[in-house]
Image (cartoon, rainbow, N blue to C red; front, top):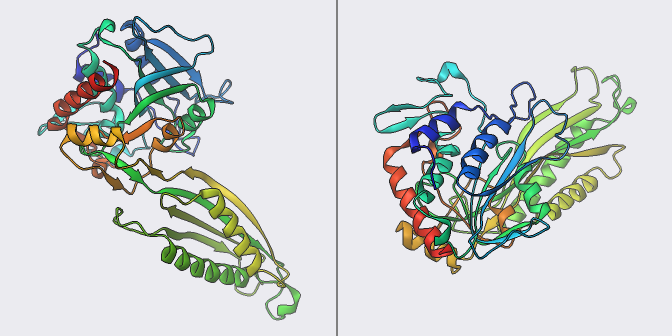
Length: 395
């Protein structure tokens, strides 16, 4: 295989802007970076497919996933496009938004300084693609006994839509999957799930001189919040996992707004919250419980409520500590698998029946902030680890 040099690939990937954001004026298409990766992989002999996400055909910020498959000589593509490989190497192509005034260097360029590569997405997670391609460059198709699959997804930083679409399509499968998120080269086998929703209590406004003229949504929300806090305490007594720094599920009330004037009964009050759940806790069941608690809090109050999903959320993720992918990556990295607080696309690949691990260069401490970097001393060890994993799973 033949790819550009590592630093050339990293420079091209970082200079190709691919911000994803729920605010359309900031959001960017990732199609350009997908096309760059597709060109490199197709020229190396991979069978590639770029697939626009649903409802993207006429969007000005088109989003797409890339699947690139290296078939061994003995394996032929299927008519329906489904594939089962030995290993999936996956990453997301998008980055968070940035404020250039906070950077000491150009964010959409690679600056090499103090044995680090600086640039937007350097550790989260464009360097992983350059590492993965550098790692597999030395191999020939004839070396492979099982199929190798590279996946590049869209919108991990905003909606997780890219990974969710892949899971729904249910076409790519592998024995193992590695998600190259920044973990300081330490395998991660577990993270919490999360959801982010809103409750709006709706009442009746009126003059505050006579409470009988209205129904206070603010007072109703006060009762809802009290009851949800009691429920949160019950969850924390029931669910506990010492593998996490915060070993219990959490619920945060992050935003509240209601009413418009001191002398007017509050007609509507809106609460935004997030819930971080442990493995074994189902988001849909939690949402139903929240709705039931809210409804019960407002019984006989002349109030009702609307419930809105702000962010569908991320499932909690756990790969068994005795699984082969955990044992392999622990041996190759020299570190025990652990848990993290941040969410990833890993549960969607787990839904594709892959033993899944999260392991990549860089630290989450450098992600999502100005002057993001990946250190030189993370590059070669990760290249070697990818090579060893490819050899163990595909050769």
